[in-house]
Length: 240
Length: 216
Image 1: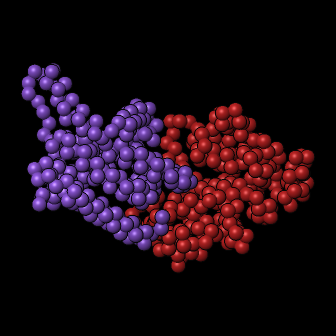
Image 2 (image 1 turned 90 degrees about the vertical axis):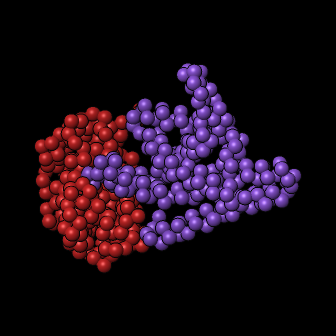
Image 3 (image 1 turned 90 degrees about the horizontal axis):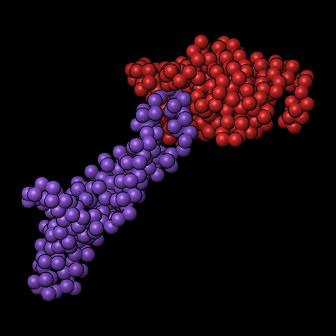
């Protein structure tokens, strides 16, 4: 469970997050939508401390991650992250990309790590690419490897930062399918996305963020079909 | 004929040792310059600025004649550096400053998403550097590093001033006796050219091999 209390983040004078309070339950799939520059990616990146909050408290499964006494590396092991631009390690094969962290961080032995990696590759449909290098894969394949890499650490929660925004349109589907499978398995997920159709289908709850605040939230039906706020209405009118 | 090949072995020896030491110093200074610890940042900045900002010629003279004078005036005893000691120390320190900047820019040229991805997997900063950033940075800095090797090899000719019998000094000694500057210095130039050309070919080969064994 993720509990966020009065989260603020500023860069100098720019207040990107202006007090977000939110609770995300176990096995819940939450999609975060909103215009560019609204702070939705910053919100997500605060959840695994890639951005250090200016103020506020974030608690994940009972551990207050914003408390500097807690080991940030241990916390991050529990939070898989998938980036817009994949960020695969280009100097390593697909298999090494996936096994690196389990071996070097968790101390898993190589054989076991590779076995897990192959299972994950099977799950994302890329077993035949185990020995390929990232540059030889399409965007959609790279993103599926990135998902497998994050899953290899067996995280309790997965964070997705616009996972399909950098993809050619015909590759969006294959990545969304993998995320959809994860949702069905009961993975707790926070997904920042511009894919409204996908959010509507897969999310248990949708947050609409604008100006660094959660302006409105609800089930996909509530938010997409019956938005209360004017700002939400005008945003949805433009994107749907 | 002057024994330029004997001089060349001295040049190669100094360059090889100085390059290895320079890479160690350079890596340490590059990481210091990027460190969060301000003391390390200041030390590396002062080091890099001072050694890049003054001529190697001056550094050689200052180290070889200047420092022993200070030591003598404090201890009251005879003290001097062996010319090879000066050659290796000064060349290592000098190339270390340039290599530090090469490594620093190489590290900074790696997309910051790489560090973020590594950290998001729970890797501490040091491991992310070791397994993700440095292996990519090192490949990327091969061309400027090769350039630095060549510059250093040629700059060792300045060591002639303190009497290191490398290629240049060997030529100078020969022509001062035989008065044949043209053939002598053409010979000197050719030996340098052969050495630098060899370095660039070897580095080219290594670069190609690395390129084939994986991307970037």
